[in-house]
Every structure is written in structure tokens, then in C-alpha cells.
Length: 102
Image 1 (cartoon, helix red, strand yellow):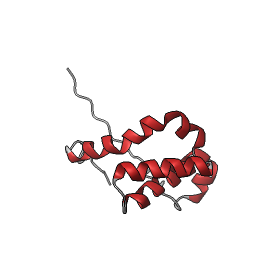
Image 2 (cartoon, one colour):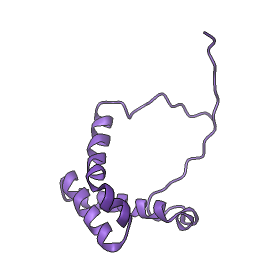
Image 3 (tube, helix red, strand yellow):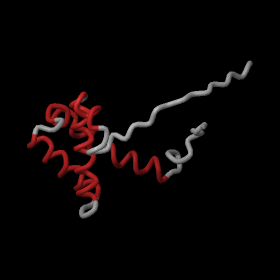
Image 4 (cartoon, helix red, strand yellow):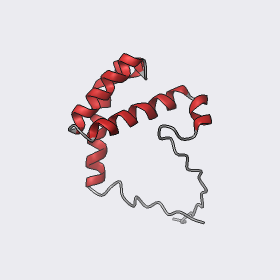
């Protein structure tokens, strides 16, 4: 079997709240997602992660941030941080074979 190589150049964009304003204004869902993530991070400083996520979901729904999506997918959204956390704790999320080329 012949081995194939691929060189890839990618653009990395910061999609955290208050970054890349032009992009955020062009995509309301992305802006709302950044707001949701920011709220989870803020609450997670004071609360267990599961409580921080629940509080962020409830608050975002009340304020119309990703409202329809969060109402429809609340149960699934609540499991994402737990899965992500265990993924990184197991080492799968660190050094995943990605090499940055200059």
C-alpha cells in the first residue's frame, strides 16, 4: 500500500466571546455559542461543572441565546462538558497527532 502525505495550512480563529467581532456579527449562532461557553466558564469558577452548565443553559434560554437549540437538545448539551473533560483526562485530546508547520 502506497503511503500518501498531505501538507495542510489552516487558519485558526479565536471564537471566544469578544473576539473576531466581524465573524460573530455575520453568524448569530456562533456568537450565541460563544456567549453560552463564556457563561459556562464563568459559572464553573464557583460551581461544579454540571451545575454551571445547567445554570448557563437556563439563563441562555431565558435570554433567547440559542433558545430553540438548547430547549430541543438540553439533555445532550448537558453531557458535552463531561465527555470533553474525560476525553482530555484520558490523554486523547492532547497531542492528537497534529503538527503545526511554519
